[in-house]
Length: 333
Image (cartoon, rainbow, N blue to C red):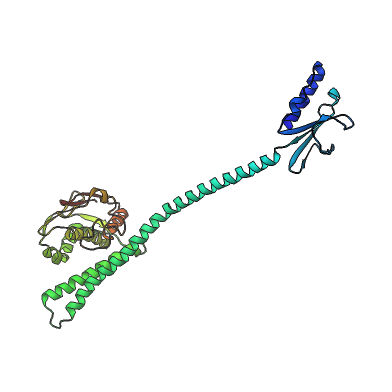
């Protein structure tokens, strides 16, 4: 509006200075506003405004219509005041309100969609972890129930046979291993461990003896190619590391299969002839609670423990596996 008034004022001044006619009808016939021109005494010269004006104010509102009073003509062509009223102010305000509402509506919709998407994205890992934890609890219950039931059933007979004693011993060892795994996962970083320079070949041979019942059950052939090698590590940690890899090689092996254990050139290799792991699952096998297969039970802690121990002692671990051919775990000590 101010631009219109300034334009009219300039034309009046130029018309007076150049002595040309000022075409007032161009402005009087405009539908967007009403305009009137006044002399020095504020008397109407010509125009179409019918409101009583307040010449003391440069602009003011009148029933949602903005009125501007301008005195920049300073008497040219006898015109001292120009008053202009915008007829479209109410409509402009309504349109502005509508535009603001639409902008806020679009903005709110975008924020709502983004919030929902981000919430879904952030909650997905929590949901997956909760499902894994639920499965872990169920599997732990099952894993504990099996050896405990075997112990109870075997103890019901007063005259225990060697086979029953072996079953009790094996079941008790299984419960002990589960306890140790859970303790290592949840309390392993609390206690301070001593480091010993131990002969890994000796420890491996001792641990293989403890697995003889499992080995015999599947009629597995164990091929040893190990040499004396001293390595600085907590003995319990190495036993847990080896036992988890070796027990997996037994559990996921085929009947009458083979397991190769090689300890040479600062490398420990455990190779089995088992079911193998698909390529798309290898990247996840070290995640806690993850199981590449439901075969042979377990609850997805073994390889996670292996990975934790390897990281603790800066041991590089490599996995090569082919489905139905077998898996090879290589530890670079």
